[in-house]
Amino acid sequence: MSERADEGVRLQKVLAGAGLGSRRACEGLITAGRVSVDGTVVTELGTRVDPDRAVIRVDDMRVQLDDSLVTLALNKPVGVVSTMKDESGRPSLAQFVTDRPERLFHVGRLDAETSGLILLTNDGELAHRLAHPSYEVLKTYLAAVEGQVPRGLGKRLARGIELEDGPVTVDRFTVKDTAGGASLVEITLHEGRNHIVRRLLAEVGHPVTRLSRTRVGPVTLGTLKEGRTRPVAGRELGALMKAVDL
Image 1 (tube, rainbow, N blue to C red):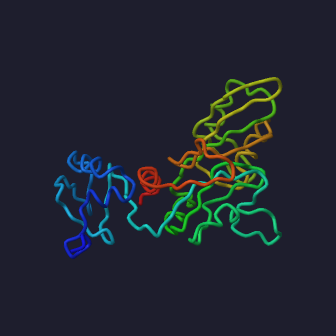
Image 2: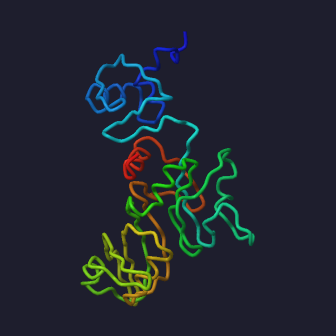
């Protein structure tokens, strides 16, 4: 008899299949009381679940059980427009996922001259929430800017800067390096307005010469090479879903 009979599938097998670790490691998660099924903490290793219906969480993070849903991290190169098909024939995101059978779409945008992390998915609800301003998902950028950044700029940015379409506040700001007449800064904010980082830094007197996004919520660019993708799955996907209350 198949394990996917009426009694369901063993919980540790479901967790392992979702990328949470080996089956033995997943057994440890269960016995430690870190797993809940439909809102109830489960500690019995013999527990069986229906993976098509159960809502399973590990450390309060949702486990994605629908293997038809895919989320990818892409390191977008400069010169590529953030669309799956460009009517003008410019390089688009589609060229990096020609081997994928799913119909993927991008979450948010990076302008053509900005490189770095962009998420591609076929999970409509996840994409909608990530793009919605009410969830305030943090995004981190590494920017090369003109001029030496003064000591108090971070506090000024945290208080808020008025732009033509309204004020913007920065959640974190760090000067990573300064050489000659240029600086390298890391900036984290929860807004996604068009060209927001470039406009913000230009407004305070430090125009951007190079810009890359390195993080979206809990998902980081890491060592992913330009033009390459990697799956966002397991705990990383769970943390991403938790960031938007899924």
